Image 1 (cartoon, rainbow, N blue to C red):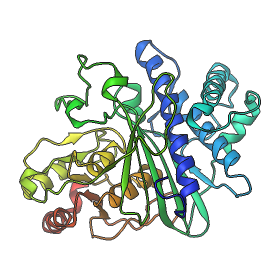
Image 2 (image 1 turned 90 degrees about the vertical axis):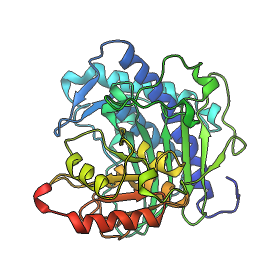
Image 3 (image 1 turned 135 degrees about the horizontal axis):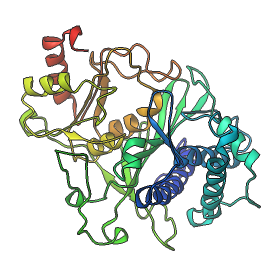
Length: 382
């Protein structure tokens, strides 16, 4: 930590190290998925994909938090369960998860953490995944984890994020966002607006151009930090490799870049396009999978993230928690479309959300967007 005596300093230090480890795990799994046809991608009940990485990250994070916050009652809200892994025809999938988790934990000393005395057994890994069954709420401490946010991007070799946040008594207190395919330097980021984001193949090796990053913030610090991922035999260094990031000063809509989800299933692109046009947003939308959108705003690569869900879709807290605190501590603002802060105290979902979510580099842009929403809102759009 930059301030050793900060409240939540121990928790933030641990969370950052854990997310670095989880990103390394994801990179290895993504490489295997992209380089060869894999049967280790399944569809959940809502047709969204889930992979070995989702379960492996959840098991790894759960085990590490429980191990290194010994004496605390560790409550974890997370997305995956063990029902699929426990089926009789999932033996090879479960074996892949067990192997992936143990390979990741074996590298813990590289991140300044102690590895298990011996490899975890299958039952221990299933137990670690199952422990992430908290429903959150207004009291107590709850870790909120999205093991692979943007799984569709992940399986395509595109953008995704590992997101870990801590909520205490209903309030966000820290967030860590790992973005393994989001380069440290904006000039290495290439967008193809006809398709999803792609990375130019002519770039130098990832250890030179720093392909991925981890961003983190603690509530009330007024600072958001960014670190490069580590590669090869390099060891994690804290905090020497961290740099401060800030939201963009742009408040003119005509100069702003806005982000929106790639997936049309849970987002109304037509309404956001009409909204962007009405307030004078001229730049092509930055359509990107996952909470990388929050990372883009926090470090000034974009100014606006607008998400208006289709009717019936409920926003889950793990899809926003880490990103919200990171944007806000970088000087940005995140509210619903009525200008109210997002409420993380009411369980698994952002209950009481007014129409949609607006994340901006500052209040001037946010207020213009809210005004446009009130002027153009038509419930038939959603």
